[in-house]
Length: 487
Image 1 (cartoon, rainbow, N blue to C red):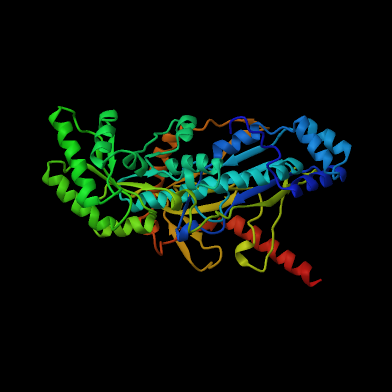
Image 2: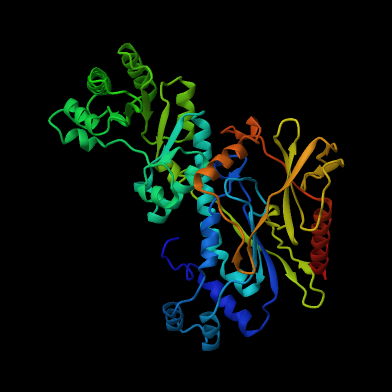
């Protein structure tokens, strides 16, 4: 997070609640879960991202003198509470699902176990960081899937909602599958490939298009992608690009990373005609890149039309997730530690909306894979102390439509716990992989999904079930709450 002090990156009510806890003193240890309820963009999954920045935020959580003075100026906080803040640091534990992992609704992505004042303070920043990067990673995964193996470059910085959204959005996009970004600062900070060509202004600043192409090719012979739609793609742009490529070939320059980019017009038609012209001149291996307000649906349509495009530059619709601009993650209290027994007492939030009723208790998440295919069969949310033997037959069921049951035969499946410790007693215990390594992991993760769950429209849902013990706990709490309401 560079030199930014993000301690005050919080909602005011987190601080007013902290003071309330401080004054009444009840700083018991609690558990909060961060999860989301609905998949973005109408998909069947999301990609977890932002964990490294969340850890950095926790590590650097300190109230400076300037922070204390500002809070004092609000005339809302008493001096003894401000004194407490002056020595504040996070002392709790945090578990999280690693970045690049495929995740599903209702399962905890982050679990915070800490004194309630500390757990309350970090809510806003955790949601801000994880929500944003997970959203952009999920959108990027969809775009890259639509490209069907072609390279996708993220280049939305100028349309992102501010510098941080551009920097960390590009990071998330690369995690989810983009081959690189136009954002140079992201490249420097996270050691990811930076990519780009030139703008229309480059062409327009020269006396003619050919001279502009020729000059650019001389400067960058090993990375020569020419923008051909400044004037006329087929009558001017492509012929001038071919002329330059021919001259490079005659001069003995080996054409490796070279091609054209089309940024407007009928991309399917223009790419097909451009390919014919390039192939006729002996340049059938030239890259044909496309941009122009692309998203996963347009890319999928162009692929269906057999457009001769093999590289995609995606900007606005990716970096802003334009059709679904918010991830919707929430942060809910799940348990409170009893001071006498030292056990966690489960807590549940009720709602008129069934989907907003929370899952209580100290939980973890297991993923069940088919041994035969390596594909995900289901995710199981359970209590943290539950242990499962993959050699034993397991019956899983839908927590809403409980009659929907599946028998998973012992010996036919593998199981993996998703939540891992990242902070212990306020200290980092997890080292994040490099972004490009997370990208490789994310590709493997997406390959554990069935194709039916990856399709862009009306995908098949992945089952997220509750263990019998957690289901019974939730049911009993709901019945208790219902009886109290009737008294």
